[in-house]
Image (cartoon, rainbow, N blue to C red; front, side, top):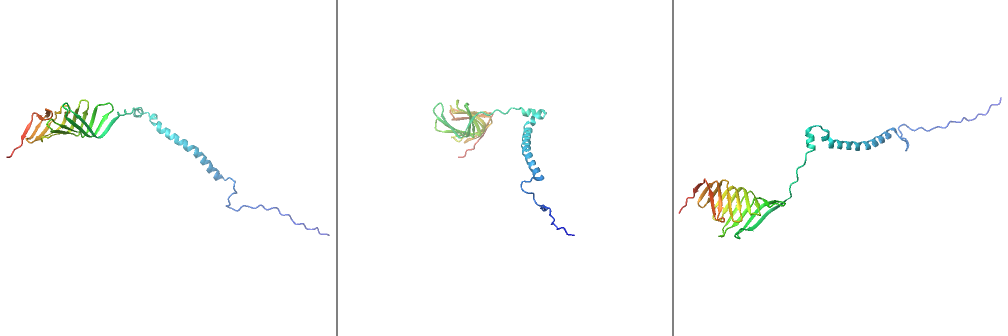
Amino acid sequence: MTAAPLRPAIAAPRVPMAPPGRRPPPGAASPQGAGRRLFVRVAKRLLPAAAILLLALVALWPQLDGSDEARRLTFRRGAEPPADTLRVRDARFQGVDEQGRPYTVTAAEAAQATGADLVDLVRPQADMTLSDGAWVLLAAREGAYARDVQVLDLRGAVTLNHDAGYQVVTEAARVKLRDHSAEGESPVAAQGPFGTLEGTGFVLTESGQVIVVTGPARLVLQETRE
């Protein structure tokens, strides 16, 4: 018998297998990456909407609350704005009285509302020159100056000093700059070369040359030594 020739066997092509743990080729989508991208897209849409909703709840909460107090606060009107006021530091006003005698009113601060004649003063002082050349100085913590009628109202620790050495201390006084007169109805204490005098008020008359302490009054004379 003649033996049949042997033919080589044809092997099937081998498909290479990826080793374990190797990343997928570029362009291939993974389940984890797709889920992360979906979460980011949803968050970008939901977060702005949630912020807008929160702001709307804060703004509308008084209307949503049914209590009377909430409604009262919601519809309350605001305070009226204050009138325009001119403020000046180290203010100074000068003038002359009926007899042409000069006077000066100064203050650490002056405030005047628009269109008003009255000027509010802080730490005012009034300096008046008398006919004989003497002077009277008045000072206080606060006051008001009516420029049209030349009247100065003083309040708080009012002190009147006369050139002759007299001093009067009281809590309130009205000074009429036109005729260099002044008066007060608050308790007063006066002192001078004569001694001390206490009363219920005072009057500055005769163009500032005479000081009268109204009574009932108490006088303590100064002892004179030769």
